[in-house]
Length: 197
Ligand code: G4P
Image (cartoon, rainbow, N blue to C red; front, side):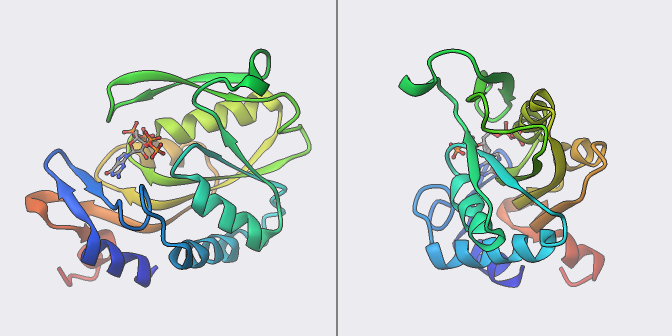
């Protein structure tokens, strides 16, 4: 998605340990117009997949997921990272390890949010090691629902997440695929393939 890639180049900051900071449009301040186009791009990709629900993890996945839900006209669920007052017990739960934060977290979903009839699309802001998306697939499996596809806004293709998700065998759509963040420079995968970097 050219507009997203242009925004990454213009506003993204490479943090020394291979992390891309995009706090001006995705992870802190959110650009609603860009999110709308992101939602439209995912919806175009998955419009023939009979999606009945979208799932993401709080918090940065929510904006692109909601915009996709708007275009596909399906509800959006976000897995919670803490049990809330209304989700004090029961429900579905799985452990997710964050390599970035070096900690184990649990994510939760209330009973009945997903059913065995659902065809589910996972949407997330970043794909790094793939742990968040794999955690969501475990919740989908626990509910007996069907995983129809995965949509990622920014994929760090130099980390192992993409490979792990490909083993699931479902369609994956990443709107920007980053081959490298070396020397503080963002290089997209397509640029390497086309020999333009
Ligand atoms: P994984 O899910 O692919 O395994 O990734 P990892 O554990 O490494 O990531 C943990 C958190 O860090 C996730 O957000 C993920 O989106 C984010 N993250 C990973 N790599 C980058 C990066 O290069 N740049 C930015 N900005 N974020 C990255 P989270 O903790 O769930 O945060 P949030 O959704 O509440 O914002």
